Amino acid sequence: MYFISMSIGFLGLMIGSFLNVVIFRVPRGESVVTPGSHCPACGHSLRAWELIPVVSFLILKGKCRKCQVSISWRYPAVELLTGMLFFLTTAFTLRLGINPARLVSNLVFVSVLIALSFIDLDTFRLPDVLTLPLLGLGITGAFFIPGNPSGWESILSASGVGGFFWIIARAYPQGMGLGDVKLVAALGANLGFPAIFLAVFMGSFMGAFVGIFLLLAGRKKFRQQIPFGPYLALGAIFSLLWGTNIFDWYWTWIK
Image 1 (cartoon, rainbow, N blue to C red):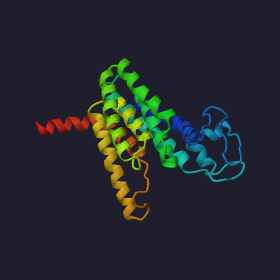
Image 2 (cartoon, rainbow, N blue to C red):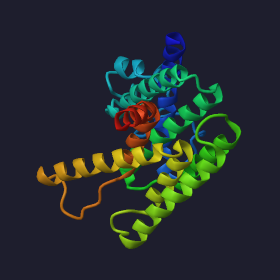
Image 3 (cartoon, rainbow, N blue to C red):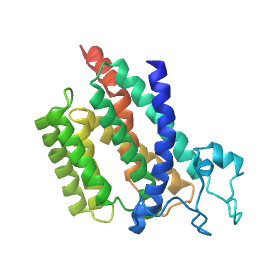
């Protein structure tokens, strides 16, 4: 099991390299397939060895080989984050004896959440081209892959939590956009009940905590927009990996 988790973790490093392309190009409406990877400053087409996750960044000392413009530290950070989450997701999924198809679904779920989080941090937007397929993935997987959530549970979770957030967005559009509504509906479809409540609670708590800290530190002003997507994504990943243990502990404690 450890070997499989490590192998998929290394695969995650490569997926993270692709996610960097998604994060950069999707908000600009560009194709993630063509043209090939290149330096955004000088257009230098990257060779195969320049695309090795993390290692190429270290070899190049964080600079483009041709124009010497600095490469953002975020590129290897996204690769390492994806690799780590792939390893953890695989380890927890295999430990619970979940259907292998569910593992694939969970890995895609985590990948899209990583891309959405960084796009939201950059642009304060959660593109439909990512949130809506994530919603469709959750519902489709729930009907065709054995395990939790079931098909109708997925639909009810998505519509219930999505509807609740839609009401909030209509009542307070300055604080929440429709992108957040679509994202939380997608989380409900993929996590089901009651995991979606843990995800929303964790995301809201972390978002509020960071928001208050930024206000007190003078980094943000009152009513200034703060991206909510990364905190929802973090809560969802937390719920995906540790939700079962938390709920088992909770039901044992209240008995």
